[in-house]
Length: 515
Image (cartoon, rainbow, N blue to C red; front, side, top):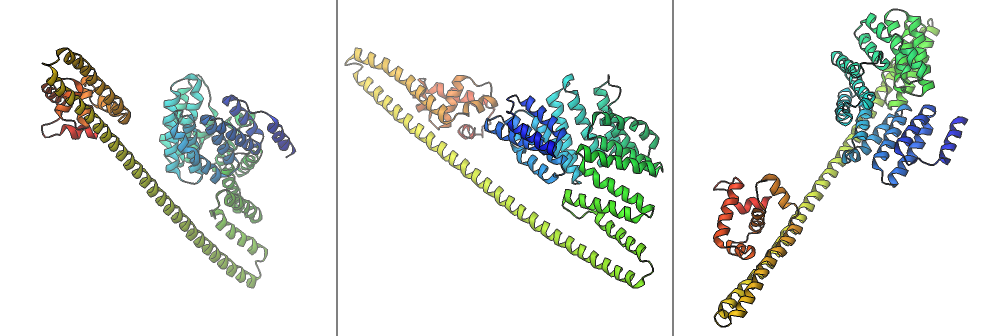
C-alpha cells in the first residue's frame, strides 16, 4: 500500500508528456504495478488532453480507465464509461478508439452473459481493425488480438468450429512464430469443452510456464484450463492445486476477477463431493460474496450456499430431531425471504427500466421535435431569402426595361447618346447576373453541388439557367438577366430537360425546387 501511495505521489509531481503514445505506454506500465494508481493517472490525462482539444488521446485515456475499472471488477462503471464516449468516437475520423471501445464492450457484455451482443461488438471491432490496420507487419499483433477476441466470444456461444477458424487465422498471420501461447491456451479451452482431452492437453502444455515468466494476467486463465483438464482426467488433487494457483494469480496480478467466483465454486463442488462440507461452505460463501459484489445480483452460488449450510448443521446435530425440524423450517423461511427479495428486486428493476424507457422516449421525441422545428425554420428562412432575391432581381429587370424603352425613344433624336447608353446597358445586364449569382450562391450554397453530383453533364450555362428556373423566373426575365434571346432561353430549357432525363409529365420547376 505504501509503495502505491509513493508511486501516486511521484506521478502527481510528474509532468504529463505531450506525446500521446508516451503517455499511454507509461499508463500501461503503471497499471501492471497498481491499477488504482493507473486509474488516477488516466483521469488526470483525460482532463489534460480534453482541455487541449486532443480528442483521440482523450478517448484513449477513457478507454484505458475503463480497462482499469474492468480489472478491478467495477464492470458497471467500466461499461458506463465506454457508452458515454461512444458517440464522440463515432464522430472522429480516427477509428482506433472505436476499435478499442467495441473490443471492451464485447468483453463486458460477455461478463454480463449477453453473449450474442458481445459477439456483435467483437465482430465490429474486428472489421474496423482489418480496415484500419490492413496487412501491415507492424500491426499483426493487433489483428491477431482481434481474431482471438472473436474466437473467445464464439466459444461462449458454443460455436466451436467457427472459433477454431478464427484461431487458425492467427497462425496464418504469424507464419514465422512457432507458438502463440494465447492462441494455444484458447485452443485448449475449446477441446476441453468438447471433451477431447488429449488434444486439449497438447495445446495447454507449456502455456502456464510462458505466462508465469511474463507475469501476464492470462496466467490465471491458463491455470484454470489446466485445473479443468485435471478434473476431467479424474486427478482431483492436481485440479485443486491448479484452481488454487489460479486464485493466487488473480490476486497477485490483479486481473480477471470475473473468473474468481467460478473457481471458488469448482473448489466448493470438489470438497462437497469429498463430504468436507465446512471447506465447501467456505469456498461457496466466498464465491457468493465476490459474485454479488461484482454483479450486484443474487447468484446461483447463494442457493447452493443454503444447501451446504444445512448439510453442515445436520452433520453437527444429526441426532437432535427437534433441531433438525427447526432447521427445515428455517430453510423454508430463508427460501421464502429469498424469493421475496428476488421479487422485490425484479419489481424494482422493472420500475427502473420503465423509468429509463420513458425518459429515453421523451428525450427522443424532444430531439425529433427540435430537429423538425429547426428544419422548418431553415426552410422558411431559405424560402424568404429566395423570395427577397427574386423581388430584388425583378426590380433590376424592370429598371432595365425602362432603360430600353428610353433608348427606343432617343434613338432617332440623339443617336450618339443612344449608343453610349446602350453600351452601359449591356454592362448593366452582366452586372444583374453577377449580383444575382453571388446572392443565389450565398443563399443556396449546395444547390450547384447537388445538381452537378446528380447530373455531371450539365454545363456552366445550364447551371445558370437552372438557378433562374428554380426561382420561377419566366423566359422574358431570364432573357433579360442572361442577355440572350427568348428563343435561346426556350431552347436551353428543352436541352436541360433532356439532360435531366425528365418525362413530359415531369415539371422542370418542381424538380429543381426539390434539389
